[in-house]
Image 1: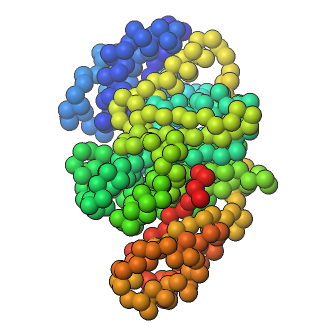
Image 2 (image 1 turned 135 degrees about the vertical axis):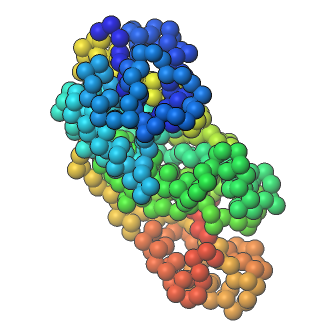
Image 3 (image 1 turned 180 degrees about the horizontal axis):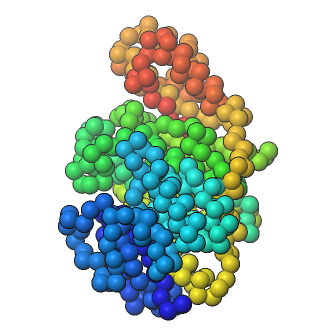
Length: 429
């Protein structure tokens, strides 16, 4: 093998950054891979829009992705088309199936694709003797996927806690720094800086984080989990009351993704705002940075930290996969990764089986009768602040019982937007 040849499908922001990286770092990539890495095809819907980089002369341009994916002079396909208008990775899944079936290694940063089809695609890759690689799908270039698959292979992973959405972490950092800032203004500021999309809901409602947690938990626990298994909540209902409570009690507020493998082998997955000790290592993860904390036996705790998005970080993760595949192909070695997502093997935890400690804040508009009604329904201990809102501490409640409680509040005339719930995590007391 004289070169390792890539076809890129999706020449947008991340794709153009990848092309730039391949051109600028070609000598380093060749040194690390043992062979030159060459871009032989680029497929996209159009090529008229400026990308800020000129494709190398080795790359043939096409608007027909199938032509690129099935070409004889391609060893691996890099997919960067994302999801469709319906939020589903339908096109990406078609590209993945075509590439793997054609005997090409498949490299992607598409979290939605791996969360929804990881088991199927791992099975198809094994059938055709090629690799499914997705380091950049969680944390961009932070090497969490490869760490789970190889570095932590001797260990039984019991829990994962992560801050894996830079948009939300930036917004929460700004709210922590300026108590006068509203959620709406913080989101608008993040949009102005390019950290949040024009429609930020996928990030701020926790969906992006849920997809990433599914990938991590599926690998760590050897199950084909799905986003339907995640207890999910976003950050949009957080207000100044939560920030004030956190500061007064030595806490920080984070959008935390947590997965735990229970004694019976089932997997509990939760994404939502959480109070964590201000002294905890994850509390220091600020702005757009990501971090993942893994608890395992016998190694104990390990943490992975870095920029979780952007051209540079994502390109690093994609090319790390390309180097890995190139070295294996050159050596003629089989896939050494001991951890994959096994198709059809899943055991989500019973939502009644896991209990958490929760802070529940209800807007009562200063109405003492409404405050008393909320207290009777919630049954927890009042912890302030009074006035227009009232907060309660519920010591232990299962996720299913919490859903029923919130339903009772809604039925009693407390609208969903008037209720904020925050769990206590990572040793909070």
